[in-house]
Length: 202
Image (cartoon, rainbow, N blue to C red):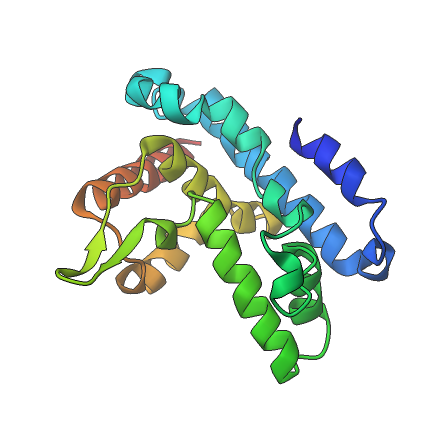
């Protein structure tokens, strides 16, 4: 079942039509993630080549499949939803937080939804942080496929704003707060550098 099928199923849930602003945003964001990925495929095919992550395909699948399912968790019911503040799914908590009144209850529900999101979406760097009782915080290496998806997720906002260079300033500003292993850092910064170099050529 792909993300589009999930969306059709989700559209039948109560309350979806009450959040048209968030629905428009999410649809556009997912579309822009795919635009960024297609740009990489056309302009920097070596960056998204299966040769970079062949051993990972057994566990995670190929990039085409991963990008096609980007953020599909926002259209599905949260685990144990009925036990935690009536969290029917991530979608409603995001919609209420970003397009409604940020009451303490809304903020609390959003925090639970965000936690669920990063736990179920490995393209977020927070997914790969392990707080170990003995060793403290450990930054695990991100699989390459999710590093590419993470870049496309970041870059989607540049596509939205019609400024493909925006992501570079954003990363420079936020770099120190983005906690990555050394290997993951090298991969994402290589992708950023390759994309900037390609954009400069055009």
